[in-house]
Length: 386
Image 1 (cartoon, one colour):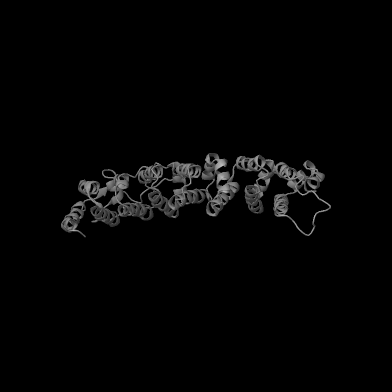
Image 2 (image 1 turned 30 degrees about the vertical axis):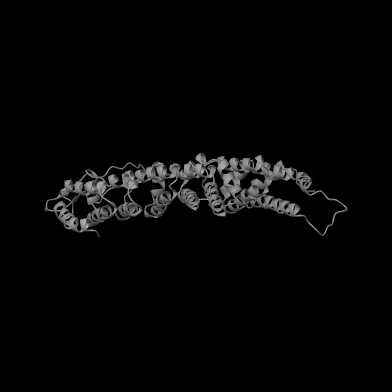
């Protein structure tokens, strides 16, 4: 602690005493609820606690010192702010009317990394201790995230993304807040622009894209509205680009995301889009194998998925994949039957995967089996692989 902080520390401690001085009852109004799905209410709007803030105007001193102070000063200020919030749960709401903590969050990007971490720590405390979702603070963090990504400060992006990932478990409504406050839209935009942008081999950028994608996955898990939002806004071309990139981590996260979306789908939109990917490039075995494996996993677990797969034209698509390889395994009498080329082996594995999707899609589904028998000529299958 430098000399300036040592001198100011007793003054700051005196400020806390003056802020809470008195014994009169403190009354506040219930905080507004900007999130329609989360009607937050304080258990009480009155307190006579000796730890409650009664002179909020003195908090301006801390706010001004934070705006103009160096990093060490700012950290000391934030410790005092946190101490005030911890003294009484109403203090955050008492001060919110006059000197909201949003003012600290709004200017934290101009401070050092230690100060930013401390600001995020206070926001996390507000959410954890008060069970409150501070919309203004979270919106400011989203703005900082967007600006950091646009300017290529990926290490700073990762700090914000890790924080946002950590607060999901603090409140069941955080996932909905991400959608309403447009964080989810920002995650999608980051992945789509980052994947399409030049790949400079920057590990920090790769981590940023991975964290943004993982946040999309976490936000859609068990949340139907978020799943529909992502389905409508996540471009299929980006999914194809990720599958083509050869990045195992991004591919695994994307397959998990698609499985979540399939399970929670309200209609056949995603099914049709995935089938269109298969239709559009039937000879692209690596990408098509990934999509077929996703279908296998989802079809195994859900009756709804099996029904939607049939309704979206899944069987027609699978037959088209068969027919595309109609002459791929032509028998040549003079060939060495003991040797199978690598290409032929890949095609055999691919065809086996198509059969697997066919079989599982009809599992416990008499209507699907009947549809397949009446709509698909069995000789077409034999002709496709002979």
